[in-house]
Image (cartoon, one colour):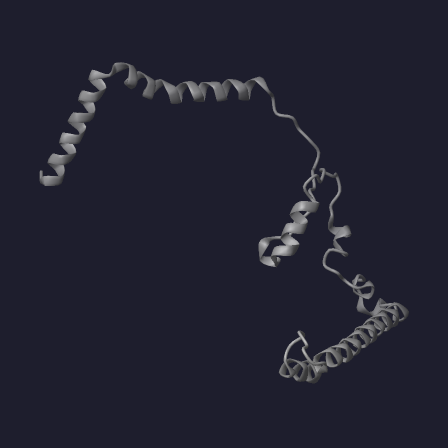
Length: 163
């Protein structure tokens, strides 16, 4: 045996002497895990398993989808109850599918619903463009006044060219 073997033998001898000199500690180290295991076994056999129907919980977003959707689904679905039916049908709003994408067959797309959605999108873009124009005018007016705290002329020129 080499140097490591002699060290291991000395360690085993020291361990054996400690166990002989402290029998109470030795018994506690041996029986404590046994007692805990017996308690768990008794509790398990006192309460028989309860059989339940199929249970569906509401799906939650994963952190890979983003922090805000993950926290939102975590907070909003905290008290969700178990249901006997699947949540697959109610997930259409979750992924923000449009009305014409919910049908399985693309030939059955309702043209009127598609046009209505396109019209809503165009109106929303028009409102955003009006807001941008008003912001551009306001920025130009306030940046031209003396002692303006709204930024230098460089920022006003860059904002005007972006919008």
